[in-house]
Length: 150
Image (cartoon, rainbow, N blue to C red):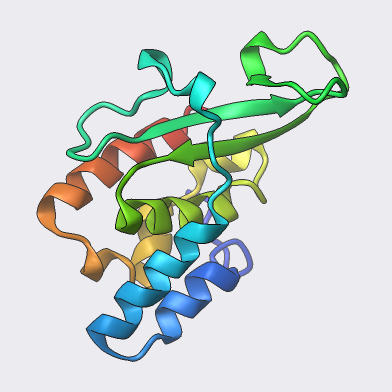
């Protein structure tokens, strides 16, 4: 497991949730974080990008921004110099916020680092875990599994 102190350092969205006062403050910080989510374009929200096991639908994929302004799934990209990142979407404001915190971190890591990074610990260290219901936690577990494979 790759969990050095620098790799577990809270990035701005996670830090804002961790510093929030009280339950309402944390919920507000999580929902505000969702406004920073790198959104998966609607045309890429398909069965193969949907995360199984989530009560509220969640789509998560590695996408490529190509020079012709097209956004494609990274594995479908025809452009060797495309810029890649992770993007997601959920209609749930809370889940979008958690996804934003996770992707803020995941997009700073290499593929190899993502495979071994303890995202569950990152959520716990930044006090997000305690704001998730059991059903949301189960769905986020599916997201974490998918993150390590992208």
